[in-house]
Length: 143
Image (cartoon, rainbow, N blue to C red; front, side):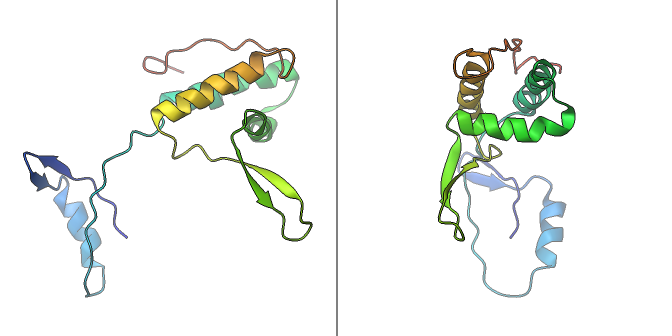
């Protein structure tokens, strides 16, 4: 499968970096193919991810007394606590498990909503950790 950006303007399509597209096509076996055009989804930004996984997680780990090696485990547990999980049945035990959602496909808006829920949980002293997280503007952040 080949994924390549295209531009549509005035009802006409153009292929930027045509040589890259052609290089990918030349390795395909002969046959019939379908070209599918989908709108580009504005996925979460690197600044959003750095703010959450870098800046906020550093504060959380420091306040809880954990090291960087615990970051992913703590992050996944917070995702579950915020309701960002899927239920799956363990085929061996029959137990229903909560599997943290992957956020890689989240839009900017969906990731912003996730960040708000994440922050509410972490800052809540009754249900979360009672840790205040620093503000940052993802559009301007240099993290």
